[in-house]
Every structure is written in structure tokens, then in C-alpha cells.
Amino acid sequence: MKEDILHNLKDISRRIQNACEKAGRNPEEVKLLLATKTVSAERIKIALENGQTLIAENKVQELKEKYEDLKNTPHESHFIGHLQTNKVKDILKYDVTCVQSLDRLELAEKLHQRLSAENKTLEVLLQVNTSNEESKFGVSPNDAIELTRKVSEFSTLKIKGLMTIGLFSAETEKVRSCFKILKNIQQDIIRENIPGVEMKELSMGMSGDLETAIEEGATIVRVGTAVFGARIYPDSYYWDEGNNNKEE
Ligand SMILES: *Cc1c(COP(=O)(O)O)cnc(C)c1O
Image 1 (cartoon, rainbow, N blue to C red):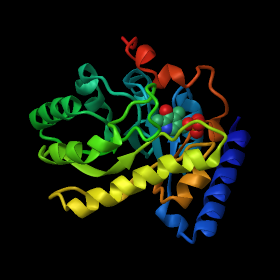
Image 2 (image 1 turned 45 degrees about the horizontal axis):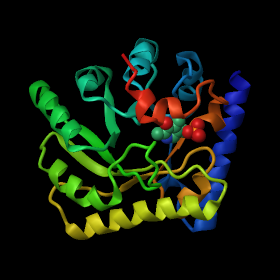
Image 3 (image 1 turned 120 degrees about the vertical axis):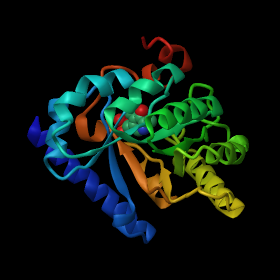
């Protein structure tokens, strides 16, 4: 188990390195985030004890279940799943430093309320639906600037960039166009010069498409299966509107 994870991590850092070389980028510009849904705390710890520092969950329930086991192993924790407004209070208990999946004003309002009450701030990325698939969450590209503007007015939320899940397709150019859309929105927002808004981070690319994402400017790639192996649940369990609402 340990050997597999270490071997896979080496493999991923080689892939990141090669993609950066090909794109003429400095590998230090690209952070590896481990997507740890369904992965046990024990397996996550192996990665954290061997050089990894950044992990993320999709569900508050899993965050909660693993929290005690991981809390004494240094790491940073992001959230990358659909966040229901009734889970906002919970998520703030588990030391999440960045919610990458902020996709609607209502959620921003709820986060701001709780954060204000607790005298805290939170980093956020706006999730954009660049593949135009109904099954994926995210603000539509056309509404991204307006949402950025509105979220920027909440003093507790620090916008650091954008996140997207690319199209699942074997056709690289179709996947690439999702990443290009995100990059273009980033450039548009930068031009708007909105006070308090940083657009440094582009969180895009996963196990299957991280090279393409890096070529298009990713600063965070989110990798699960290529490090920890296949999951028993299909991704639709985490991403589809219908299924996601079943979380208790
Ligand atoms: C699961 C997940 C990933 C990682 O996907 P893999 O294909 O396993 O690398 C990345 N981003 C999000 C939002 C995820 O839910």
C-alpha cells in the first residue's frame, strides 16, 4: 500500500515536471492537491508523511470523519465539493483554508454570516462550469464576473482565483477548450480590477488531464485516482445534482 502510493506520487511529480517543461513553465508554479474522497486517513497520512502538503475533500461528512486522525499531521486542507448552505457551519470547524467550489451568491452570503460571527476569514476560488454540462456545478462563464464582483463585497471572503472541472472526454482539444475558457475568464476579471480580488490561482486538471491543464496555465492540479487508485463510487455520486443532495 505504502509503496504504491509513493510510486504513484513520484509518477505524478514526473508528469507535472514534464508538462511544465513542455509548456516552458516553472514547476514551482504548479501545486499538487490530493483529492482524497473515499481514501482512508491512514492512506492520506502516507502521502502527508512523504512530502505532500495539500489535500481536499468533497463532502463535509468525510472531512469530519478523518479530521481527528489527520489533525496532528501537518497539512493544508481545501474543500472541492458541492457545499450545501446547511453545511457551512460544519465546514468551518475543520480548519479548511480554502473553499474552491464557491459557485453561488447564496453560499457566499451564508459563509460570510458564519465567518463574521466567528471572526474568521476564508480563502475562496470561484467554481466555473466550463464544460456546459448540467451535471457539473459552477457558475456559468457569462455570470462569473458578476459573481466575483458580488463576492468581493464580503470582507470575510478572500477571492484567490478560479476552479473548474474539465469535460470528461478522450478528445484532448475539447478538454483544452474548458481550460482556455477558465483562463480567459481569469484575464477578464483581472482587467476589471475589482478591489480585494486576487486572480493568481487556476485550479484545473485531474488525473487524466493534468498535462493539458498545465499547458493552459493551471497553478493547482487536483489528483485522486492516479495517486490512490480507483474509487468504488462513480464520480457522478459526487458531482451530480440529484445524488449530491442526498447527503444527510
Ligand atoms: C475527485 C476529484 C478530483 C480528482 O479526480 P481524479 O480523476 O481522481 O484525479 C478533482 N477535482 C474534483 C472536484 C474531484 O471531485
